[in-house]
Amino acid sequence: MINDQQIGELIRKIRKEKGYTTKQLADKLNISQPKLSRIETGAQPIPLTLLYQFCVALQISLADFCFLLEDNNNINEMMSVRENSSIYNDLSNSSLTKLLTSLSLEERKAIIQFIQVFKKS
Image (tube, rainbow, N blue to C red; front, side, top):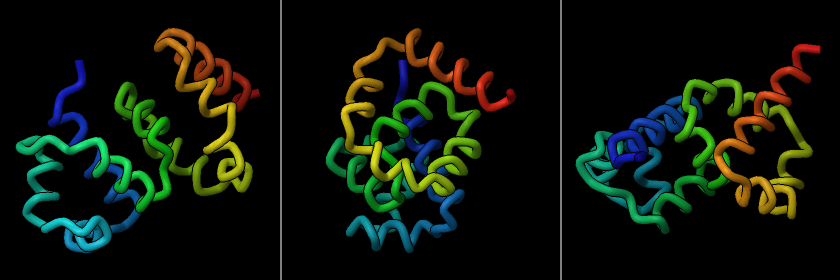
């Protein structure tokens, strides 16, 4: 089961990957820097509405955030794909995203493995 600490750690990783300080991101989210720090350490849970604002502010879909929670070892790869793909913006709100989020964990893992094999070819 995913806990507040894991969510906070992923928020910190994404924030750093995007080059934001805690102050910059807190300002963007209209929250205090100490509150963001508590969220990043897992000392304070993040409300879903604030998580959504975080995803919008850092240009990552909520679906991608959830995928990364399950396997955050791929954060650098996913962030790179996200930033280098103009198609991604068109797909992020499409029926494809809805379809992917409706899949089971096992089905998503299978698709990710397929894509990784495909990329190596």
